[in-house]
Image 1 (cartoon, rainbow, N blue to C red):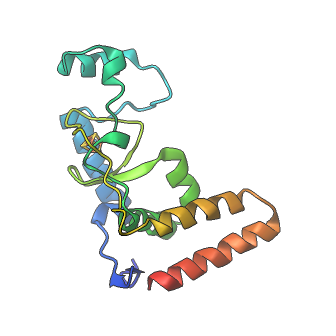
Image 2 (tube, rainbow, N blue to C red; image 1 turned 90 degrees about the vertical axis):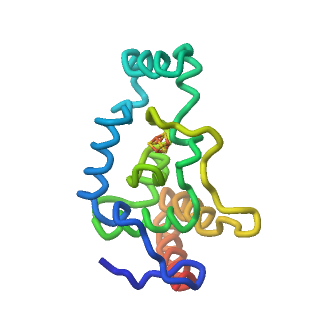
Length: 174
Ligand code: SF4
């Protein structure tokens, strides 16, 4: 693992689960077991899952479905964490990190220490999230990542520009 990566001029200390898929899966599975993290496929109705959440919160299914990782106060979408997740996916070499992150709306759960998907939830959901960078520190990396993602979907010329931009962004963060 490369610990030399930097963010905003400081050494980038990433949570272990953002770089180690086994640690991430261990913590995720523990959260499924103990705090009902899920559902497996948020695009599927999975009525049983949401009925249990509604029962827990003594509310109806529609209201329960409004409480997701994406708006949980433990869901970390700060630029620093997003860069950690992006670098972690790069190191695993499994897929294009910007696509994976965009499709899954990935963030980092600061409560249970794993990468979670915005559309899921758990019993410990905390109102008021997500965690994002303050106005004084604009999420330049996030915005750059978005632009790069769009360029990857365009022509070969634009794909080359995306690669150059990624490299420039990494140099800036060192
Ligand atoms: S604590 Fe929040 S961010 Fe973490 S898994 Fe539960 S709902 Fe998601």
